Amino acid sequence: MGIESTEDVDTSELPANSKTPQAAINSDNQEGMGIPVVVCICLLVALITSFASVYSYDRWYAQKIVAVDIKGYIAQQRDNYMAGKLTDEELKRSFDHLENVVIAIPKNRVVIMGDAVVRNVETIKP
Image (cartoon, rainbow, N blue to C red; front, side, top):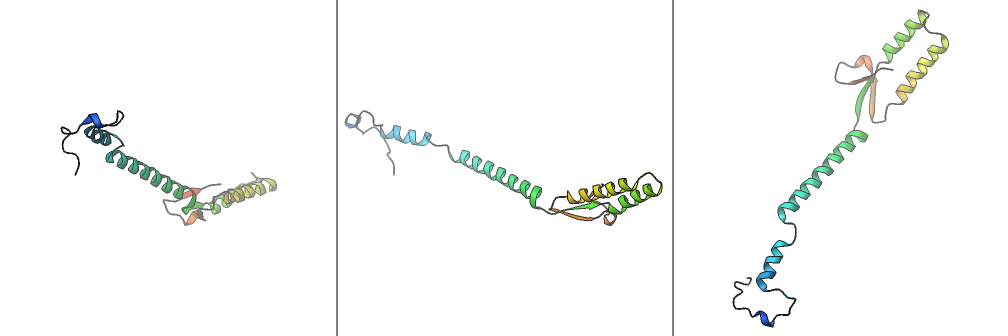
């Protein structure tokens, strides 16, 4: 297929800037990155892209379950109010705080009551 030997090539007829056939073959083999380097780059790009995709999905889109201990919080506030530790205004502020905590939960979180949770769920205490 290729040039087998360079012995019978007359280089006097070639232009001054041209390469001998053997030099052209050697320089073609040395140019470029090579298959292993290209494969490594492709794998690295695929890993980075996969990691970024999974992280983004988990952070912003995946539904997660959180529990809010509303019943416990209301019971605590009621006990404090009955004991005279809270005024009417402080009780209103505490319920406003509870409402703000629940409103601040991101939309990709499913909120359930804290007393329904047994384990393995993040519980938010206002």
